[in-house]
Figure 1 (tube, rainbow, N blue to C red):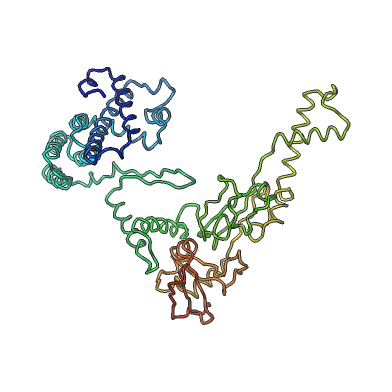
Figure 2 (figure 1 turned 180 degrees about the vertical axis):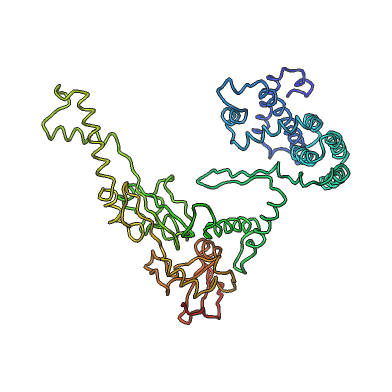
Length: 491
């Protein structure tokens, strides 16, 4: 193990290599064999190492970017180069580049990081606070806050000190410094369509979002066991769903849910076909293991209860199978591959002709794909075909039925819930997969939480009685909630 003084005397490349080796040894060590005091010491040293790593990376990235080193590898920015060569996500590369810019503007913070006297998270917070001050006061503010942190001040104390400096140095408010220039929002998609959200909101945007989360993120009742973070997530999704359903978006209107059901010819011909065109919801086939991982639908459970479903059949032509067809055709016509009259060019032309013929056979309203889909599937997925076999958009629940359910139920029918009709969706009391009909007697209004989460994910059971009252039963049947006011008669 080399001492810090020895590392300082090494060239930068060798110092980085030794640091990497030392961290590798530490990662491979048996942490459980250490005493708690040794573990604590290592953890604190690693915090200092992270601070120094951040400062070193920022310094190197600044020099690398200034010299255009990324251009040697054919890249247009240090972020794209780092994402490629460093095998990092775009967000991580952007964060590293942001540290290079941040420490260039706050040299005192960079020096403290290099010395390991402040953590990375505290350094970033100090930069955010002082970055809002007039430029001529930022350097002094950095020094004051860093010295206070070194003297033992807590983060709350530093926040109060930063607020006091802002009050004393702020220029007259002309509505120019409300964070508008610094606003940003990033939706980063990752595994199977999920995403992470990050950003910096203006006070106005933050207030609007907080109002939405507070209004739509309340507990729905004793059956609602979601955490606050989960309720906030569902509130944001519900707000977007309502906006889409309201038809207020450009080129958006119609049904509140839209599903494109993609299926391959292998799935149509195989033993495990989607039995109701559900797009992977609760009414999809039980044996989903037969579906390829990349083909698993992304629509959530219950999303197809009130949806416009457009079936799409996809496929490809296997060259090996095409070669077999070519050989079979040649044999059938008493022509062999070795005979010269055909020749390589003739075989290529013949192969291309068969390829076009195969495409004609597979696609179109009378093609094999459409023939299989309309005979093997049922419901909306078996609708009339369009060219290339993109089926017509078919409403799961006709508009007149949805209107009748809305008029009759006047809101969510889950006992104790008072969500208005605009927040609700029709639900099949008896699922279509079990023979339930799309009729007024089998439809019920539920808000998005009780429909998509309580019923279709948590398996609560909804029973509609003859007198119009409703009973909700928990999955383990230990809880029963019953309404006592029948809905009004649909007009």
